[in-house]
Image 1 (cartoon, rainbow, N blue to C red):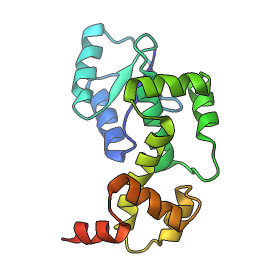
Image 2 (image 1 turned 120 degrees about the horizontal axis):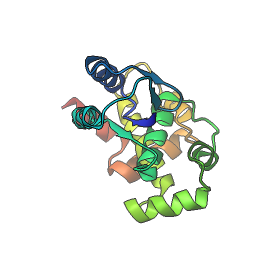
Image 3 (image 1 turned 30 degrees about the vertical axis):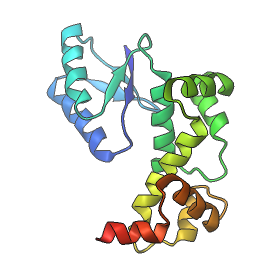
Length: 177
C-alpha cells in the first residue's frame, strides 16, 4: 500500500520518520517525492498509532483518500526552496506536473483555503530562507538573490522589507541583540 509522506524539509524530521517506522517494525521504502510504500501489511491500529506519533513532529501520512492538495503545495514549495535548484523555474509548471492538476485549479484551491496566493506563499518561504542565509557570514546578498531566484539584490531587499517590515540590515541588528 502506498501513502504520501508529508514533512518539512528538515533532515531531523526524516530521521524521526525512519526511526519511528523501524521501531514500529514496519518495512517501508521511500519512493520519490515523499511517497512511501509499505512492504508488509500494517494493521489500522498500528498505522493510526504511527500517524499520531509522527504528527507531534509535524509529519503527516496521507492516503489517496485523505489527500490534502493545499498541504502538498506548501510542502513541495518548501522542499524546492530548501533542497532544490529554483533558479529559472516556473513554479506553475512544476506544481502542475508534480500534483497532476492544472495550475488554475491549484491556484484557486490554494487561495480559497489559505487566503493568499501560491506566488505569495512562495515569496514568504524564500524570505524565510533569506533570513537563515543572511545570518551566515560567508554568503553574499548577490549569491542569496541568485540562488533564491530573485532578479537582483534590490529586488531581494524590497521583497524582504515588504514581508518583514525591516531592511536586511535592521533584521541583522535585531538578531544580533
